[in-house]
Length: 248
Image (cartoon, rainbow, N blue to C red; front, side, top):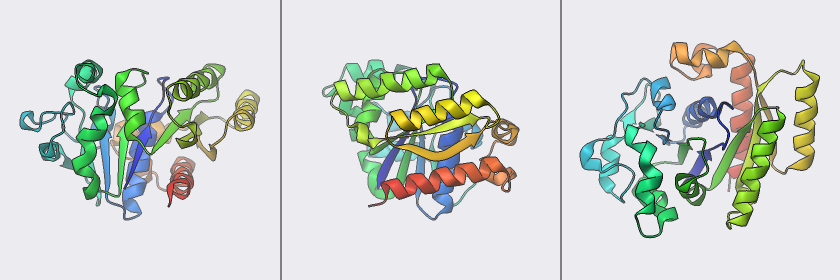
């Protein structure tokens, strides 16, 4: 089983759209897939038409508990389940800080689920805090969406520096570009710069198209309502590249 974190320390970069589409494509390939919505805003939960909230008896994500599985919901798609967001997730870093081994809490909480799925994907909030460190510890692979701007590349450098300084392996980090307008010279130049400066920048680039924004209207992955669109093809390429990178 592989745990894949879709993470960015910068907001507004297409992180949740990537998490939803990658989870959908993983399930479409036949892999038993769980998407965990760790962001209290619950965008992934909204896209999959699932009611937010973790059952009280499951004790949320703060304790190791086999009953966490009671909160997992099926989606409209075969082989794809969702652990919905809960507003209490906004305080996960505070809850973890009060525990022993505070950076290992998420790993222990997810452990009972590992044998149930081929892939667990984590849709993460855009912060570097104790919850993020739990994500870094739990994830086998960290997938980082970048947008072709100077500030996005600067944030990525900050993330890589933080990981290296705190003993996390940068070799587990894969980046890709989203919100790309290939007509813009600046976009092309910044993408080329990033591919020269950083390892593991995937070839797939998600175009800046309305089909991605329409996920909120259709409440579904792009491949469901616009299967022949360039955006759907880009997410498919992203999944294929990522799957090849994590295959044993």
